[in-house]
Amino acid sequence: MNIKPLKPELVAYLKQHRLEKKFDKAKQLFESDIHHPSLNVKVLEPKSLKIYSFRVDLKYRALFFIVDEEVEIISVTNHYK
Image (cartoon, rainbow, N blue to C red):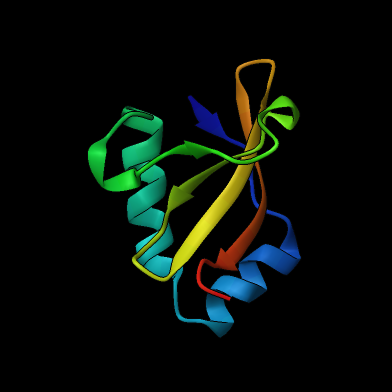
C-alpha cells in the first residue's frame, strides 16, 4: 500500500524532531507489509472514523487514513502527550 507524499508541515515536524530516518524505515516496512509487528498498526477511537496509527518509534506515531487504496498521513504525534 502506497503512502502519499507528506505535506510540508509534516516534513518540517519530522526534521524538527529528528525523525526522518526512523520515519523512512517505518514507511518502507509499512509499504511492504502493513501488518509488520514493529509497526503496531491500530485503529483509533472512535473506530467509525477509520483513522489508524503506526509506530515511528517508541515515542512517536503517524496517524493516517486510507482512501482508494492510498494512505494519507495526517499527523505525526508524540504518543505520550
